[in-house]
Structure formats: structure tokens, C-alpha cells
Length: 197
Image (cartoon, rainbow, N blue to C red; front, side):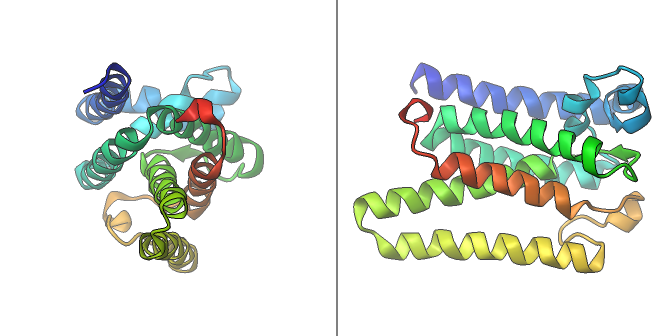
């Protein structure tokens, strides 16, 4: 395993570890969640840490399992693109919530970052299929992207998620966070910068 691949894996595991700590320690969860009022009072770190907090174990389990699988798959293909995607999606989602969704008082979860990793992986597979002339693989990547958009449309229309019982956890899913994360992942995945390989 190359040092960069190992380092990328450590980033994924460190973020998951922090998410588990935030769930297992309710005070940490409250102190780290995206809380609009607290952020506007100067607690800017919540813009980053809010993604690591979850409403219940079911929410954490599905978000963390998805993050782990997609994180490993993405790091295996490109550590630079994975880290750029995570940083970009974290920033973009939180900034969009703060600037354009003032009705969102609190936010928790890795699902926006999961969405970013999903579209990053699909985009990297699509790029690879074009380089290698493997059009069937490219069709799989395009289908995955279409499925992602269909899932986001379902969540927007119904106000529920496919995998987590959001009503039992007492939260409303934010399809906008998933779409923003997905957009960041696709942009980074399709970008041509060699430095991100």
C-alpha cells in the first residue's frame, strides 16, 4: 500500500472515528452539530463538525457504512480527488445552509458527504471507461448518476429518505445537502487536474 493511499484511508477512518465519538457522547454531538444560531454567534467550527454528528444509531450506521465503503473505493482510485471532494463538499454544504436556507436551524449527518463520494466514484469510473474504451463500464457510471438524481428527487418530493427512518429519528432529510455534495463530487471527479490524481 502506497503512503498516499494509506494516508487517504487514515483520513476516512479518522472522520468515521470522530462521528462515532460524537454519537456516543451526546454532549459532543450537541457541541459539534450544525447549529445556525451558534454559528452566527461565532462558533464557526460547527460548519465542519456538523457533518460528523447524527440523530440516532440508525442514522449513524447507514451514513457511516456508506462513507466507509465509498471512501475506500474513492481513495483506492485517487487520494487527492477524495480529499478535495470531502473538503469541498463539507464547505459547500455548510455554506449553502448558512447563506440560503435560514429555516434550517440544525443539521447533522454524513449523508451529504456520502453523496459527494458516490458521484465522485461514478465520475472517476466514467473517466476511466472513456480512457480505456470500456463503454459498458461508462454506462454503469451514467446509470449510477441517474439513480442518484432519482433518489434526490424522491427525497425532495416525499420529505423522507430511502435508507434511514428519518421520522423515527425526528429529522427531515435535506435533499439540497445531497445535491450539493453530489455536485461537488461530480465536479472533482470530472475535473482534469493531474495534481488530484
